[in-house]
Image 1 (spheres, rainbow, N blue to C red):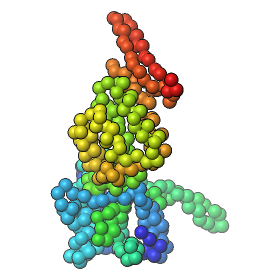
Image 2: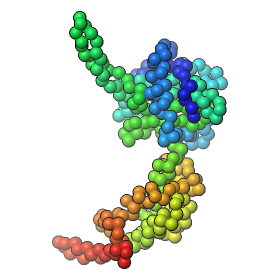
Image 3: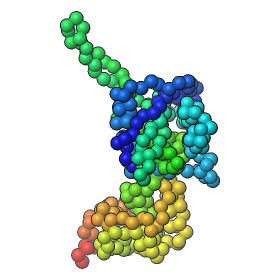
Length: 335
């Protein structure tokens, strides 16, 4: 995607409250008049700030993508069944109805129509949806009767996106940002109904979750150790490790259903990824893997963090009414 020639065509601003707190939804009836300077700020902050491969998602729906509300409303706009102002109202109303938690902040909702975005040698338009939940204080200086004065102003910083989405024309792909995603997930999951297109970071997280789940389902602490050693050995032998490699080792220790169930859960949560696509450079993956494998569950809610040059060989327990004595056997990796 090339955005160097992009321009702002239309901007409208609505106010979206939290319906659970009985805050209102205030819909504007006309677009905002923008100057060239304002348009350049919106392009630099909102458009450039969201177009990043780490922010790439697919709009989704449980049964039919045409039933995704965002996709449906934008499709009606592109086919000229509704105007840009009507589109913006429908998006704002959908966001308002998607608020299912009283802690979701109210805010200003910018709907922006961008044009001249270049993709695959063609120019595309895009709909930007940006919700401002926090405003910043600024110092402004002016002269009064020959004396310099400072005053505090409050405003919006377009380079700090609280919540944003950019939907490209004729595509179900969406760039999405939720700066407060650890506190609220309604923006991506409820409003957009989008699933992330797995990048290397997401694929690594999926692979590590699979290894962790398999390891946690192995009853024997010794076998858990051996399973981890097999995965590490594979990383040592190869420059990259695939989901198929991990699955083949895993199914020696747990039923196939354990693997399939966890992969489906992760795909539902993080975005669909095929096993053949789950291909990771071993150098980066192994360092993350070691942090997981270094923790040994001894039982009785006790865990042990192993030094890198030791492997776990066994544990015995001696317990009476007052004391619990644990005998842990470790083996140096070099023998």
